[in-house]
Image (cartoon, rainbow, N blue to C red; front, side, top):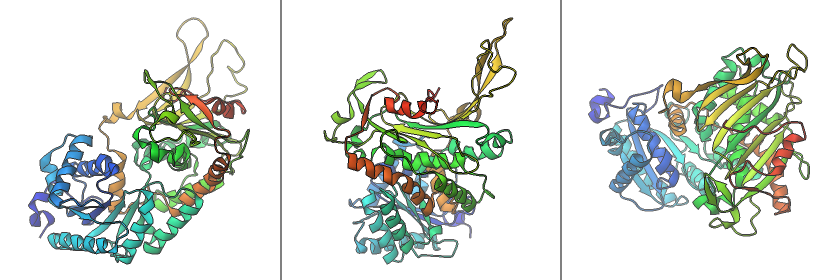
Length: 514
């Protein structure tokens, strides 16, 4: 008997890429991430008929919630946050198979009750289910969840088979190198590495995935992707908003932990890594790790490779806004950086001598994430040194958000009788070519975890390689306190020290997003 014969209301769902019958358990199901991202992602996968034909959802949280109430609140969240219009008939196929389990994350009895909920789902399905655990909680309980999944036997379910359990772990994965090593140790003591999916939602963005295509499917670029032709690379991940209601959390994190150590370093790895032997997950992740390990230690102190700053009152989005120390839950003595800029050196044959600059911060001029590869200008040639010609360096800009696309800056003759040139932009935009309603990152990543594709997830040694670079910097800042913390006006592009970081090598920040 087929799946749809057994469950006619699942006729709109289908298997995809070998997806096994699955039960997804979301820890922290009543939290903000589940409401805004995870549940809408599941709904959109259902719309696209990409969930397994047998799919069950269990929310897990401290607050007791009846199954019916969780089903109702999930529908409300989807109607509010989904990129697509909510249709009750589509979500009903999942909602009818949605349950809720209340309990403490450190209470073994709650996991025994969870096993009973899973047994009910399997009885309904008439077969064993693949268990996918999504850890969407504060990081303080990550270890408790992993350990209790191990002790309860849920982690070992189906190991070595097509329906072995999987666990998706949200960021932040550690706070420094020691805590990341410890979390990896706990994860490895309860799950095998192929069962562990460390998530960074940036890797689910279409343009980030397109990096591999742009680099390795277009022969015009790869021969130039080295220190013979590239002058420098800039990576910008900027936000226009301030910390808002997240002040208490943000002050314990800061821009470096929040954005640079994870998202931006992943962009760096994909931009600079050598070509993998194949498109397999392990070959790609091997090259990423190799690249991260070749990044040289940061020079600390004055005139070093890092600048940190906090935003002050200013004009943002046409409105007067307050400074960081005036935000809710931010102590007056806080030295937490809302902006960080770095100058990185990669010690390998491809990139020796090419500086990589990265910056991220709150309350900057605009919201944009991009990678800008600037090529060297010829020192000799037909137009070199002739003041009549405005010859700009060629630049390839890969914009990740908000306007996803690729721009190549070239030089062209200005029409007319005078011998004049001018830089021009060749642009490709996803929304123009493919339409604007593209899948969101969490849709891709949840689906990949269900089908067992680890390409866009982070391996344990990747997290440690990145933290090995950042931990000495963060520890030095903790020792210095507010000493050396610069300021910048809200709505600007950051502090003067960030400009000095580039000007010392004859470079300047580009106007990102333009």
